Image (cartoon, rainbow, N blue to C red; front, side, top):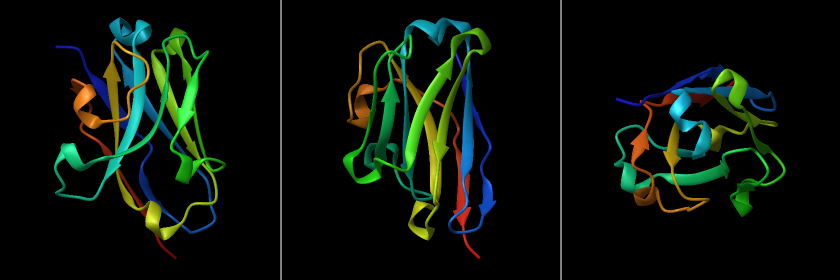
Length: 125
């Protein structure tokens, strides 16, 4: 079964930066990969869209409320998609999920059929 595996989460102080990684099966190199975030215990259907990147990185989109601090990139040679977050705030504390879709670049979580297990980010001093 194709997999997406997130890493890079942890405890971070407010104002600091963080880079999350999503390592995928090579089969996802031709797919859109997106990031969602949700509170612990929340259903995926209520996850918040963070941003998405198309298969070759030529198109990226970030949620309006997060623009300026969140950046998505990918390196298909490494089968990896990244989410870089600057100036972290306590309200960024969530579980961050890496997801994949054959289409570019939907925002509803139901449009993504492949999900990783998530990596938790806690922003606190």
